[in-house]
Image (cartoon, rainbow, N blue to C red):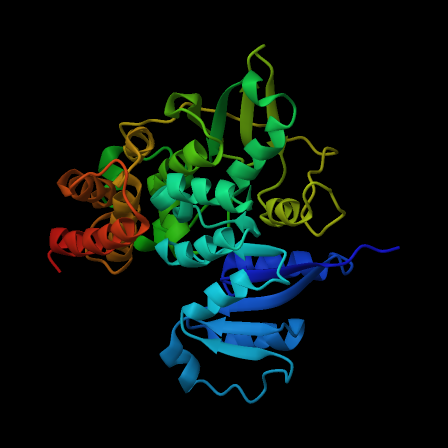
Length: 387
């Protein structure tokens, strides 16, 4: 007998992770059934996805955009949900097996939190959920019986490699970083970086915000914080190495000195599919490594003077509390400022440091406190930029 399909909801279906998730589902030979999609304002793309997938629901979190759009071609069996409560409703529906959280930034926390509260399997691509509220989310998951599976390529690689040994045998994890487009730039050259240069990533095809985070290496800082809570590690157990080819996605070292790595081309379809198929592995659409041709793998220690975001990541992972929410919000606002020409590339991380230092730190915040600090940090960054 064939197994029933896993019913999935894709939050942020019009982004790069969301569209790749739909490709994975389409290639799953019926093992994955997409029954819910969400977008913020990309109504036309969401409609096209709905006509192709024919889900039970589509949700538009920007209600005004959704009300202005012509939905006459939406499939009859698909219900339209308007406003942010739509993603929370889909995430909590009884028939949903897996929620893919791929909304970029702090906006993704609400849907991930709803999925955890409903005891779902959460395929987490939104690292900001754990950066902002890691202890709260992990405690809630344990209390509700929810399972959190990583979609980030680095954390998926760690999750896969950890299965080579027992948890108590783990010594450290090593997150790989491509180094972005500016790995060999001098401080003086970095001060003249243009928006176009910062968006030209050498190995990955990602959205604008994540691409800028890769260039500043803030993405790796956020991944350090995410790994700290996701895998229940001490900050000193998390290291970073620069690996320009983006083939080794991360490594795990065990107590006997063995290092286990997960390899693959820079293609997000593999970690997406593994989160959706776990604990099984299926044939799928991800690109494969070709060992019939020669290639080399290089590793370099990161230059933390040139890329001070890494130090911030370790500091915030040690502090916990409100620090992650403030750093994340400050960075989102600073990246937006850079993309609009308000600050230089080299201003992004110092600005985040300034806002982090100004906030009233609390080691044990509530979710509402974290959301309030998210708004506060954005306003402080606006002041810093002189807008």
